[in-house]
Each structure stands twice: as C-alpha cells, then as structure tokens.
Image (cartoon, rainbow, N blue to C red):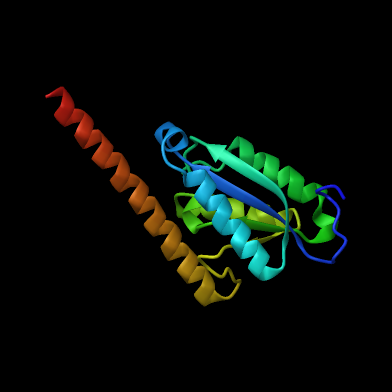
Length: 158
C-alpha cells in the first residue's frame, strides 16, 4: 500500500508543522512534538496520515511559505478523497488574522478541511469570532517575542 492509498475507508490527512526560528530547528523538538500531537489526534479521529509537511525556520506572519505551498498542492491532488489538513495549534498556520484567513480559505478551496487538537474550526459566527481572537493573540505573541529579542540585542550591545 502506498501512502496515497487508503483501504480502510479512513479519511486521509496531511500534517503541517512550522517553527519560525533557526534556533528552534536546531535546538528543541518543536517540529517533532507538533507532528506527534497531530499524529495522536489523527489516530483519535480515525484519519490516516498520508503526508507530513514541515516548515523549518519560516515566519508565520507570511502566507507564502514553501511547505504550505507543497501541502496545498498535495491536498489539491487528493481533493477527490476529501482530505484533512491537521495543525497542532492555530499559531502554526499563521501569526495574524489576515494570513490565517487567507490560508484557511486556500485549504478549503482545494477541497480540504482544517482540523486541530487545539481548536474545533467551524463556519458559524461564534467559531469565526474565536478564530479571529486566537489569530490576533497569536500575532500579539509574535510581536511580543520580537520585542523581547530586540531588547536583548540592544542590551547586549550597550
């Protein structure tokens, strides 16, 4: 059986993992822990993980990312199987409201559904409100982290 085949009727899934800093790629296990959590979720939901896309050292503030493009192409290719895209947390898909909705729309436009162990995505107004708030909080955290890094650099040079 190849990774594209599915003999048990399970929904096929693609996992998307992302870390933004090269330090996170070299030290720590952010990508591995995200993938493990997504695999556990897929098993719980009865999904068959058919592909994993890892974004290493790329900011979530931009929507145009190599592994994201690869995942969208893969989802498009398998759209007849109604695939699922799994992310560990809303902050992994994007760090900001605009990028979040752009990528969520792109995932839907290629025939896939977005899922996460951290949030249940929905199309009703309450679900969209929660998504907007969480995407905004994610952006705020990214800005806060950047400010901390900048402050440390300034102190080091002084």
